[in-house]
Image 1: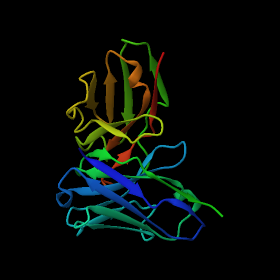
Image 2 (image 1 turned 90 degrees about the vertical axis):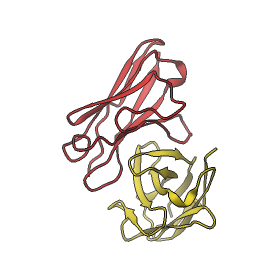
Image 3 (image 1 turned 60 degrees about the vertical axis):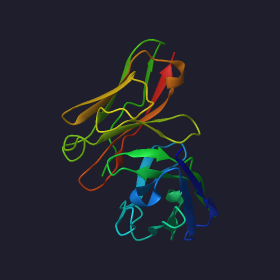
Image 4 (image 1 turned 120 degrees about the vertical axis):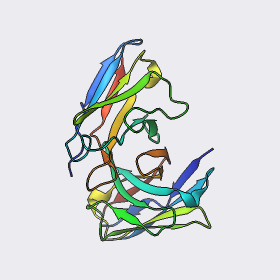
Length: 117
Length: 110
């Protein structure tokens, strides 16, 4: 059974940093890309970032480019999202998802990030 | 890039059919057969319901079907059931983004 468990969310001040983690199990982690998708309170889904299975290719939405960095540790079946220079508009639940490059077939429950002073 | 356009809400009685539209452009929905649909119950993780326009993952009831014509994709739920009440999001590959989501549609079972 595929399981994705995010952690690392919390309350952070504008301009601050946070590192999210997503622990995966139930599939061969290293051969699949992974994505991060966020959902602001009461709003829709927004794709944030993706990383290839090897970690050699990364992709970002324009809204986070230059501020967020995605990485992965295939020895620990974990993908990370380092978020710097956080803004109020980054407040959202952040989901990680198993990425098939054309669709996202499994999603985690998400971790809430609140950017506020 | 702007989100794909979906109706804010649709509703139907148990047993009826409802169709959710998802309108994009020739740079996303119209250009690629990579449309997927996700169901999200309140407070839960999204669940993949349709991929590649019309394919159903294992375990998804055949009451759910997808199609596309031009720049508009559609999700049809036939034989509506109470557990189908949820938010639904379409998603398409786009020229500049691997995943461009729709605005979301709330399905209400009357």
